Amino acid sequence: MGKDDINQWDPSLDGKNLTDFYNPNVLINIGPAHPAMHGTLRVMCRINGETIEDAACEIGYLHRAMEKLGENKTYHQWIVYTDRMNYCSALNNNIAYCMTVENLMSISVTERCMWLRMMLMELSRIIDHIICVAINALDMGAMTVFWLMYHWREEAYTMIESLCGMRLITTATRVGGMVHDIPDDFIPRMKKFVKEFPSCLREVHGLLTGNRIWIDRTKGVGKLSKEDALKYSITGPCLRASGIDLDLRRDRPYYAYNEVKFDVAIGTYGDVFDRYLVRMEEMKQSVRIIEQCIERLPGGPIWVDDPRVRIPDKIDVYTKMEVLIHHFKIFMEGIDVPPGEVYSAVEGPNGELGFYIVSRGGPKAWRMRVKAPSFMLFQSFEHSVVGDKIPDAISALGSVNIIAGELDR
Figure 1 (tube, rainbow, N blue to C red):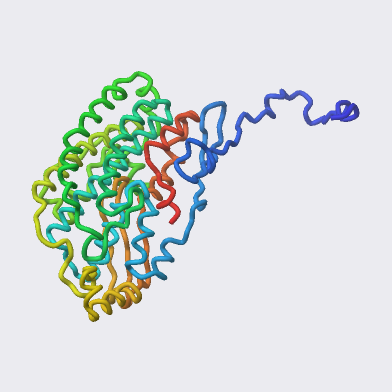
Figure 2: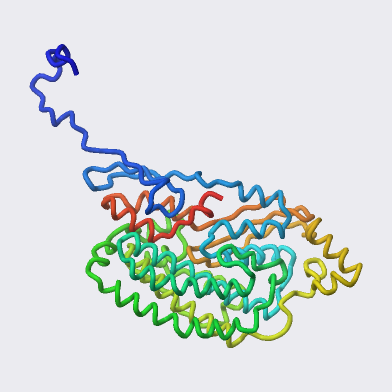
């Protein structure tokens, strides 16, 4: 500002205090490139000092046209894309999608396949919750919890690797079966896992649940009331943490979930602390379900005996011409799905994961849509952080466990 500018005075300001023209509000970006951002998410916050007065969420930084690809790829080809939505629990996505196609084709998988899929879905739930709790604790400085829990995550991934050769993105299922049956040492390793993993949960409870710093950083933070949770169509652990007793495994059972015993964890206040407690209890209940799956896992085939989807054994492909032709048609042309429409949903680690498919016949879907829980979770975030501090926004974001891969699709 020059000397002449200083000497110029606006008469309209006479008699007014300069504080009348001071706006304390500042706009600040949290994301999309931020160490504490759980994916390429952007939250624009209007802050007054350290207090968030308003927030606006923006998505679209990881959009890959997943649903449109589902209409341009064959049903088998699209399995690999389900891995890349919620990549923290890829097995759950694989199974939910294949179950939807099987329902469209009126196919019931074998008993062995069903119990194995249930076991893998619960193992996938444990992995997802480990990531949520451990990373949320790490965001708030509790590094010991991260190392304790990630050891068990790696143990789980090692078992999955023995099943399908992959750790993070699995593509372990096929329509009508699995890519492979479990190896001989899988069940002994799973028994060891479910026997020893609860000791990790007890240790984490000892480190966090009564910790004064953890309580101060989580209790009353990112609250979502019952009414707001329903208004924003929240599902899964975040809905149950707000006091809504709903779990699709119990209330709309699929596979044999109505034959296993487990408790549904319910919170009260819908804050970060309750979400943490709900996920900790759900991991404990998943261990119970896996134990029951191990006891009831029968022998027999892993594949349904249906020539429309049954992938031939390699030895037959190499030695029989008609089997080679059948194998070629399945993978080059795709399976023939009859006309119809279906919506199937499972209780995913973060909430209701549903696939809606419309078929007009042939090897590709005419319409493919995915109901991903992260979309509803993110739209509620801008409401739940109003009135909290900037560091509270980081703990609240970690507690809802938004995965950008399924948010954008």
